[in-house]
Length: 152
Image 1: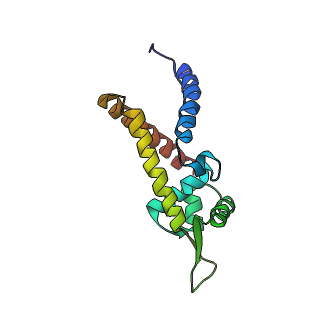
Image 2: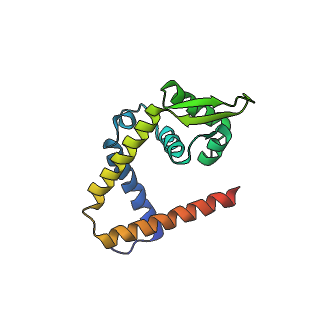
Image 3: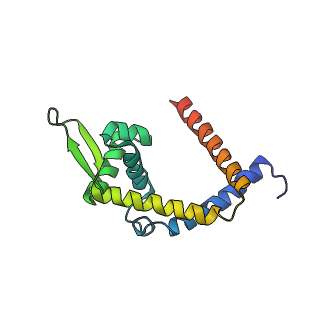
């Protein structure tokens, strides 16, 4: 590929990323592909899976949304029985959110399918290119994370 200016690179990236995301989504569990849960809801489920139960305000902060927005998102997950609200016995104002068995099973299924998709896609790419790609993604993640922390 010829040398691209940063603008050309950005334009090309904006063309190809939606196609890649669409293909990954097409191979995801039916709950995601059929629109039963949103990407935002999936991110909440994955966060709870890796961090355990947490307070609504902490979950909102981790997802960088308002507590009100998180409350609406969690409400839909509660209705579908993917998560449960747990009230503190000594102070019912404190509400923890935790995965239900159904939510935990869904996240395990999502993680398994994401792994399989990565293996399928990147199994055809050289080990050096995979290493370079991962290194660049981690670098971009660090840049975006530091930009977000500077905005506060």
